[in-house]
Amino acid sequence: MAIRQEDRAAPGLIGRLNGRHHRAALNVYLLIVVGHWAEHLVQAYQIWVLGLPRPQARGVLGQFYPWLVTSEWLHYGYAIVMLIGLFLLRPGFVGRSKTWWTIALALQFWHHIEHLLLLIQVQAGVTFFGAAAPTSIVQLVVPRVELHLFYNSVVFIPMVIAMYLHLRPNPAELETMACSCRPSYMPRPVATPTPSAA
Ligand SMILES: [Zn+2]
Image (cartoon, rainbow, N blue to C red):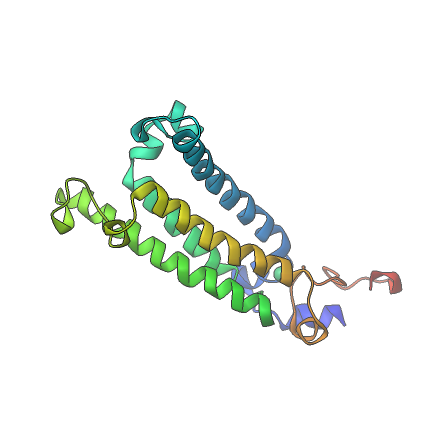
């Protein structure tokens, strides 16, 4: 039965990413997202616990490579990579997990627009809203460090809920799952029957 499920998946790279490699792809993606989010948490710790001035609160990697924090290209690059990941890995999700994943995708889309606005200002050498430094829309209300800690958190939470539910499908979701995250997934047709795989 698992073999037929796999055959239902789309062909090509997207099909493989959402089929036999879905679980591995999700793990790699999660690792990248957690690493980035951890940097934001460290930055928050540096500001609110260690009392560092904001320009000096640059996370872990930023202490060694300050340009990692100051480059709007890099921030934008990360935001778009995260958005593409959410988009590419979405077809493998079904049912409740797909709903949560889609929420993460929608929130990341907006987060990415905010970074796009910052990047445009740096590239054009202008600032919007009469601000002294490049400023995004919600940044008019919430300071940058807090805002992006918030953005990364509100994208991370539905993403993790989606992954959790995806690995614990209900019977209806199990019916429609075609990826390697299925509890009884078998990567390819095997000669010998494996009744214990379920
Ligand atoms: Zn999956």
